Length: 533
Image 1: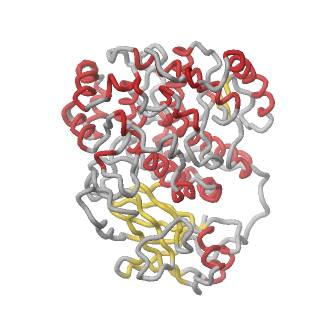
Image 2: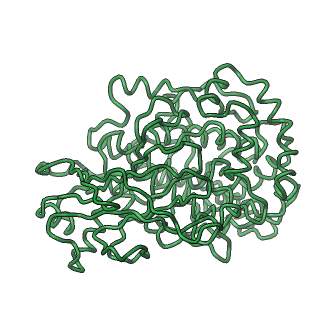
Image 3: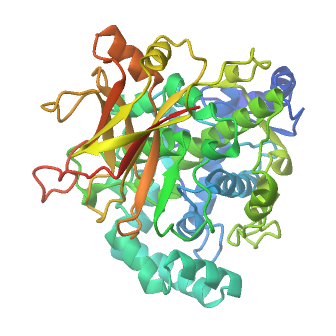
């Protein structure tokens, strides 16, 4: 199989091997900033010469994975189904599961590309809030003609992959059967129903919403990727709330409620949705792959998750610098570490023996480190001890669709002026969307007048956008998002809209995303509070 990638290549053959050879030298250059020490592989920023060279190898491997028969577990779409079958979201295994998935995939790319130095580059969307231009070349975009033989129609996709998926389904281990039953995939028909109707699947022209002509993240998503949001997401000093909420299983949906950490609930989810077309005016039938659990069909998925993994590494090194725990404590650590991950495959397509969360607790197992990117500045010597805030958490009262939270005026003023040294976070709880066509993105407004029902990214009332990634039939489960307030408070104070000691918080759907709806239905608030981190 061939593609147009090399016809539009940005590096000559000599430049490619020169940049690849530079990996070792650059690792020494950056090694002094890394607490874990020198590693064999370095994941570079995709905008760097080394990162661009790695994309050449990535494209070679994608072409080979597309050409592999679906009976081979390394086939491009079979690999994407690993994420569909097993990925956790909205719980404390989110970061560690994706580290394992990305690490084994990286080894497969290293094997198939023939580049022994390959390491997945990361896309630092804080520095570059648009899809890197090279990711629109050839097989690096799922809209390329090379994908047509497999995803030109749903029937084409189903007939291509289903025989191999059926064979896999009939050969599952008892552990895999148990995990899939927990997830709700009690039969292969149930899985295919979700692929088709959620929808997870897209035809080639709709496979990625953003394009070379329209590569930029929308203004709200870009704000959710800004350095202010990143610093707030790195601010927690314990494993939770840096991660999302503790749950009993990485694959069993919570029955009552769950809580998203800042980094998962905002940059992660919003980037997925924006690339996948969950934006005003796009009906669910036209969504691309990145908005749901077949998202690894889009090659940008792995660059996105390399950046998420990098931020976990930044947080880990920050914790080490401050002498604080990097993993759960006590019995929580034991529970977290023994959670089974049973679907990863090695570079030969065989099941891996490293099948527990604890196997991926650090980056040492895959022997890589990162070229520094956004957020590194949080790794500093321990600061001067700060006086304890007057109260760690302020509960709100619901008045219709508004949550009113009383916060001491002095604390609000100090936070607005950036003088507390801490992060103020709104915790807003709302029900999980109840249908695939329901809105998934919600703007959080602070102190907005009642007549304000929508805002742009520059509005003084805009605090952030919370987003649900993918649709799973979780019913009316309540979901809590952590929304940093510090930057929004400063904007409100600058325009004399802060108020004395009460924050009025509400959420509004960004837009109706179903073509059948002319207006998004109101979303009930379940609870609102303000937390001091």
